[in-house]
Length: 236
Image (cartoon, rainbow, N blue to C red; front, side, top):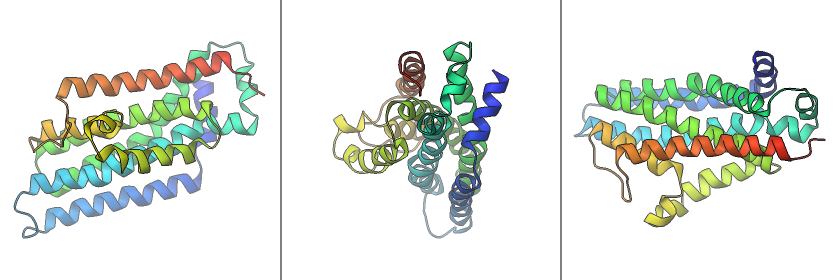
């Protein structure tokens, strides 16, 4: 599995992807610092920190980072026709899916989870906000990452379709009502963070354990989709 992991890691990484995500990561931390230094801008620093983390971290940095690398780790080799060399090797398909998830976590933790945690800490919103931000962002990149790994094998141009989901569905449609909101990953990550940070929860929010269970379930479903595609589709 180590050889598969190394091969997929080299495939997914590129200077352009790393540079683009690093810019957003740096922006999130700078905004966190700005909130922490501006004592007169907000009466409740914790609520301001929560708004920043949900607005930049959980709504943009975490899903976009997971999308960029999750859709590429198996999707790019599949579209380029190079996945066949890995697929034809006599190895269990779950090794490939697990290695792909390992690659996504290897990249998203330093590029998204850690910067989100640092941003929360810099706001001065307290330990609960920082720990909640780390947990929520980790579950976010796990759920999004696994989902987009499977999606990358299911459709071509998965990055485009993933952007439509993240920006259009979660950003606009899911804000219309409780029904669409429950079909968005963002609802569960924001609910989890709000509960841990002890700030007012968003509309249609859920409790901590239902949020955690749902996010883990989405991650497992994404991995299951990737495994099913690896076992059933024709790789050419």
